[in-house]
Amino acid sequence: MVIILGLMTWLNRRLGLSYAEHMAVAFVSSGKNNATAIAIAVSVTAFSPLVAVTAATLPLFQVVFLIGYLRLADWLRRYFSDPKVGAGGTA
Image (cartoon, rainbow, N blue to C red; front, side):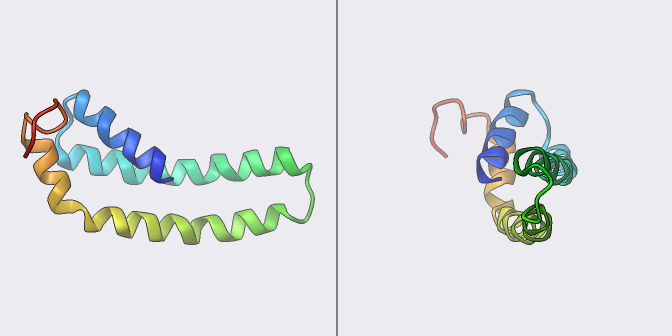
């Protein structure tokens, strides 16, 4: 999830999205990632009882990562507003 959020942040900045648009995309897509991860777990474990473990614990980690991501809000606002950041410059 950390890799997905990092890649999504970089890509949204490159696409020219604003901070508000980026946060909307980040939170909406993270819920879809949860459903995809459960579907992959079901296919990999061949419907064994271990599927319930993944389905039960993934939302817990998702909440922790998204709260941590919200704690980066000030940095993200600067990242999306400063044209030098992400283009090799320093802020």
